[in-house]
Image: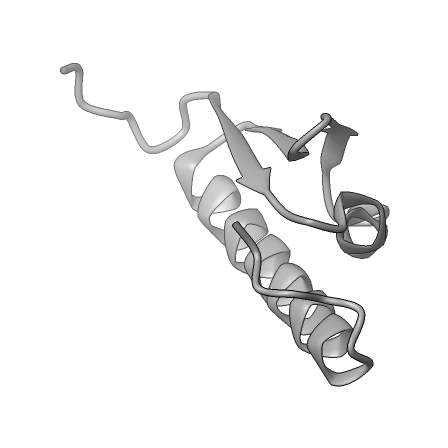
Length: 81
């Protein structure tokens, strides 16, 4: 595996399975490019550096966790797959 250079472009695709992808994806509208699939969400990140990717990853994870907690609190979110 090649080592990542500090200011080299980097991309990531994250596939999430969830029972209510429509509700969960609403938390990503301002955070990342995504598409809904039959079983969940595909999140697409592309940045100019690994540091930027890490920061965006953290923001996306916080948004998804908050959405999941909200769905559970309102009894809309069953256990995700």
